[in-house]
Structure formats: C-alpha cells, structure tokens
Length: 120
Image (cartoon, rainbow, N blue to C red):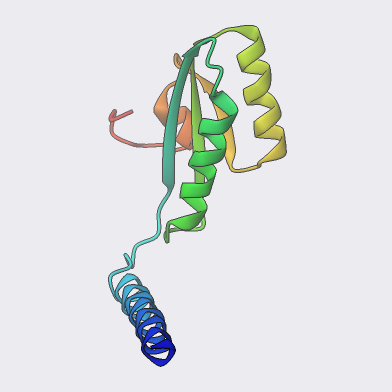
C-alpha cells in the first residue's frame, strides 16, 4: 500500500515538473521581440487604507511578468488624503519600481514620451 502511495506522489511531482517545463518553454517562445515600456497602473483615491498592499501586489505582479527591462508601477493619485499619500510616497521611496503621479498629469509626461502625435 505504501509503495502505491509513493508512486502516486512521484507521478504527481513528475506531472507538476513537466507542466512547469512546458510553461517556461512556451513563455520563452512566445515572448515579444520588441522592447518597450511596461506600465501597471494602480489608481487610488480617498482614504485608501489598502494602498500599500495594492502597490506591493502590483510590484509583485510586475516582477513576475516577462517583459522589457523598462517597467514600473504607476500609482495614480486621484485625490488621496494626506495620510494615504504619505504611505504611497514611502512605498515609492522603498520600491524604486513605483512612480507616484497626480491624476492631472499627462500620460506622455509620465511615460517620458515625446512626439506621440497627440495621443497622450
């Protein structure tokens, strides 16, 4: 009986390993060739008690994603209260991937793009 359980556990681990290898190979094969900017926007407003957790989760997602080296989390301040803004500023100082901007800022100014043909 114990031998069957051992074989079942080994088969489970083999399947998980095979899926991981196939997933990694597919991500490598299907990665985009062009490089650009990867931006993950996190809009926050009001008291936003969960601001730090949302920013940390966004940074975690951004680090997990394959993509260009030029990537960041954009924290959009849509009217945060002073305490929540201080939390966002502290998170931006702690994690260099976070950029804090007001909602009135133009997207072209945030991304540092010029000559976008009026798109931003």
